[in-house]
Amino acid sequence: MAILIVQMEAEADAVRIKIMNKGKERIFAVSKKQITACSPYFAAAFEGTSQGANDKETKLYDVATATFEQFLLWLDWHSNSENSRVECDPYGPLYLESLSYHGICELAINMYLFAHAYDVPQLRVDATDRLTWLFRRITKSTFSLPADIVGRVYGEMPKGSPLRMILIDGFYFWGFNDTMTFKSLMGYPKEFLVDVMLRSAKILNDEDEGVTSLSLSRGCDPRRFFYPCYYHDHKEYSEIGDCLETRIPGGF
Image (cartoon, rainbow, N blue to C red; front, side, top):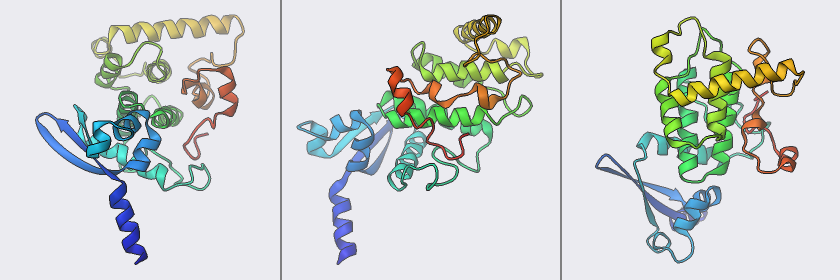
C-alpha cells in the first residue's frame, strides 16, 4: 500500500515538457516540485493560472534532447543528495567519468547556456564551478578550448557574463599552446580574442602595480588563478561571504 501511495503521489506531481527540435518532438515527465523549485521560469510555467498549470505541460523549442537529458540528470542529483560537498557523490554534478576534458567542458557550457535561457540559478553556479575544476586540472598538452563552442557562447551570452569571463581566463591561462597556429586562432570570435588581450593587459598592469588578488600570471598555480566564487555573478559584495564557493566535492 505504501508503494502504491508513493507512486500515486509521483504521478500527481508529474508535469510534461515537450522538447521541440528540428521538427521532432520528445516528451519528458518531470516532477513539478523539483523543476519549479530550481527555476523561476518553470515555476511561472506550471504554477498559478497559466495554461501550463492547467495542462501540466509546456514546450521548449530548439533545445537538444541530449541537453535536456543532462539537465534532468543534474536535477535528479540535486534532488537526491544533501547538497553537501562531504556527503554526496565525490565528483559532484556535471561530471561523467566517460567524458574527456573536452567533453566535460562542452557539457558544462551547454548546461550554463540552458540555465541562462531557462533561469536555473544553481545550474549556472554548478556549470562555472565545473569549468573552474577543469581549468585547475588540465595542462596545455591535454586541452584546447574549442573555437565553435566559444563562438556559440559569444552569440548567446552578454558581455561581462560569468561564462564569458571564465572562458576568457581559461584561454588566457591555457589557450596559447604549442599547437596553436594563426589559422586556428582566427577560428575564434574576434571579440573573444580582443577580450583575452584586454584581460592579459589588465593582469600585466596589475602585476606592475603590485596587485595580487586575482591578477596572477600564467606561470602561477591554476588553483590560485581560478577562484570559483569569482564566476558566481554575485550582485552584492556581502553575498561573497555567504557563498559556498563551490558545489563540487573536492573542488579545491
